Image 1 (tube, rainbow, N blue to C red):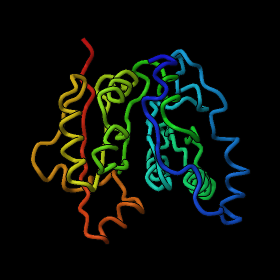
Image 2 (image 1 turned 120 degrees about the vertical axis):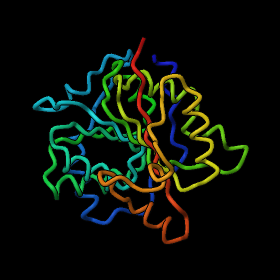
Image 3 (image 1 turned 180 degrees about the vertical axis):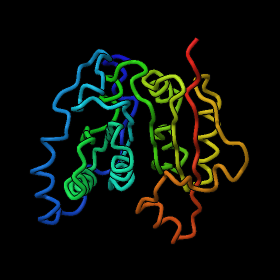
Image 4 (image 1 turned 90 degrees about the horizontal axis):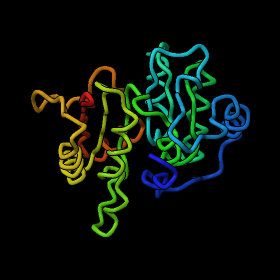
Length: 234
């Protein structure tokens, strides 16, 4: 993927919410410089392992990490992995940085912007696992073009995922669930790993709940947990 593709994955949500509390603003001011990516190559040559010292065994990517609870949990549970997150919402970035500082996490890097430019920069097959958790379902028909799960974005993900890499997707919207399954199963690079209905109706042990998920359950919405594998390249 080259510079012309950088708009493929785009967040249409807010960039900033309510004013940050002083502690969160301090976390943003003091922590972002140490974990953020300052610049990206535009030619698909960034080896994400080079962002970490020491180099991790592999790099995992979360697209749109929200408040960062899931990303921070994965980083703490898997110190051998480099955890890279993309999130344009400033309040979410500040929340993650507060958790990074509180837990002393050293294996987290952040792209505080839309994921499109990051995916364009990443080298082929450089991501060992990817997460897309509770993306906006954009329920109105005229907004379906904004859904992050679409053929072009799946092409971008297929390029950067290593052979055998896992792609995890969660949603609490039944209509979007059908959309996700249709588009991902139609893509030649992905295979669904579910063996029975319980595989995607029950959260795996290594898949912690987020605040958004807890709110959805409280409001009567059922979350679904989908796991796909990147097929081996010919």
